[in-house]
Length: 469
Ligand code: NAD
Ligand code: UGA
Image 1 (cartoon, rainbow, N blue to C red):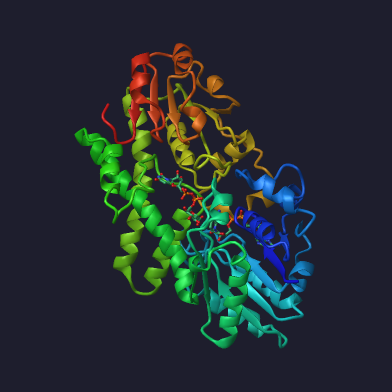
Image 2 (image 1 turned 45 degrees about the horizontal axis):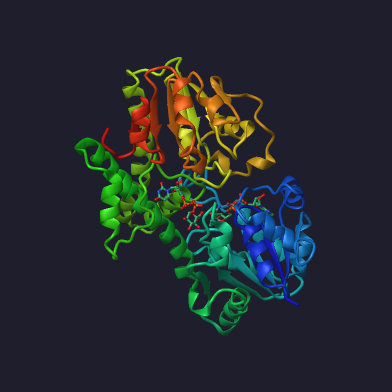
C-alpha cells in the first residue's frame, strides 16, 4: 500500500489530502502540522477552515485512510510520497523584503525530511515557490541523504478557496513537473497514478520542473491581471458613463478573451495573488529583467489604486468627511464562501475609513471579532507568518465593533459598504434597513451585488463599481 504524508495542514494541504483519500481508498494519507491547534481542529467536529463540501469528505475518510497528526517525523519517515504544503509568505525582513518569498518554512521541512528519512522518497512541492526552488531543495536533501534517493516533483495547486472541493474533484488540469531522468520520469509516473484515480489522463500535464514551478506563478499573475484590467476600466467607466458590467460582457464574448474573471470589484484579495506577483517581480529583477518586473508590478499598483479609490469615493460623497459617522461594513472575507481574511481588500478599506475617523460596524457571516481585530491591528505581510501559532493581540482597534447580523450593523448607520459578495447581501430587507438608517442613506457596493435601481427607488444613494450614478 502506498503511503502519502502532507506537511502543512492548511487551506491547501487539508482539502487536497482529503480528496486524495476519498478517491484513493487504497492509499493511506496522513496530514501533519506543527500547529497542535490546527491538528486538533482537523480531528474535531469544527474543522479549522470553512469550505463548502469539505466536512462531508473529511467525515467519510477520517479514521479510515485519512489522519491528522502533529507527529510529523513519524509520518514523514513512513511515507513513500511526501507533499510539502507549508506557507511561503512574502519576506518581511532582509534581502528581498516586501517581495521575495520566505522559504524558511520550506527549508525547515526539507531538512527534517532529510533527517528522518530511512527509505527512498518522492518529495512533492505543493506550496507555490519561486522558479528553481526544486534545485535548492534537492541540494538540501541530497547533501544530508545518507544514501537515500529523493526525487523532487513540482505539483502546484490551482484550487480557489470557496470552491476548493469541486476544483479538486474536477480540476481543469493537474500539473506535474520533474527531472527528465529515468528516476525523475518514474517519480512523475507514480504521482500521475495517484491523480489518475479520478482525473482524466489528458488533464494531467507533465513538464520539466522549472516549467511547472513557473506556470503556477504565471497562472496567478494572468488571473490577477484580468481583474486589474477590468478594475482599471471601471475607473474609466465611472468617469464616462459607461457600465463596466456591460463592457466586461461585451469584451468577454470574444472567445479569445472569454467571460470569466472579469468582475470589477473593490480589488482582489486572498493569500496568493499579491504574494505570488511580488515574488514574480523579484525573480524578474534578479534575472536582469526590469521591464518585465515593472509590467507585472503594475497589476498590484492598480489593485492598490482601486482600494484607495473606493475609500476616497466614500469619503468625498459623504460630504468629504466620515468623522464620527457610523459606517456598516458588510463582508470582511476576501471572497464569498470562505472565512479567510488574508489580504482581504476589507482590511485596507477599513483602515482607510478608520484613518478618516469613521466608526465601523462590521458583519461577515464567517469571520469573528477576534480575527477582524487581529487583521486590523497587524502590519502588512505579517499575517502569513503563522498567526495561529502566535498569542492573540490584546489590543483592539478603537471605533470598530463586530456584530452578528446585517441589520444590527446597519442600524443608525450613515452608509453601507459591501466588501464581500455573500449571497445573503443580495436579499436583505433593504426597506427595513433604509428606515433604520441616518439620512441621506448611502450604499457603496464594492462587489456590484445589489440591485442599484431597486435601492434607489427605496431612497438610497447608491455607488456601484464602474457604473453610472
Ligand atoms: P496555510 O498557512 O493555511 O497552511 C500552511 C501550514 O503549514 C500551516 O498550518 C503551518 O503551521 C504549517 N507549517 C509551516 N511550517 C511547517 C513545518 N516545518 N512542519 C509542519 N507544518 C508546517 O497555507 P495555505 O493557504 O495552505 O498555502 C500553502 C501553500 O499553498 C502556499 O505556498 C500557497 O501559496 C499555496 N497555495 C495556496 C492556495 C490557497 O487557496 N490558499 C491555493 C494554491 C496554492
Ligand atoms: C486564486 C486562484 O483563482 C487559484 O487558481 C489559485 O490556486 C489560488 O489563487 C492560489 O494560488 O492561492 P483564490 O485566491 O482562492 O484563488 O480565489 P479567487 O477566486 O481567485 O479570488 C481572488 C480574489 O479576486 C478575490 O478577492 C475575488 O473576490 C477577486 N476577484 C475574482 C475579483 O475581484 N473579480 C473576479 O472576476 C474574480
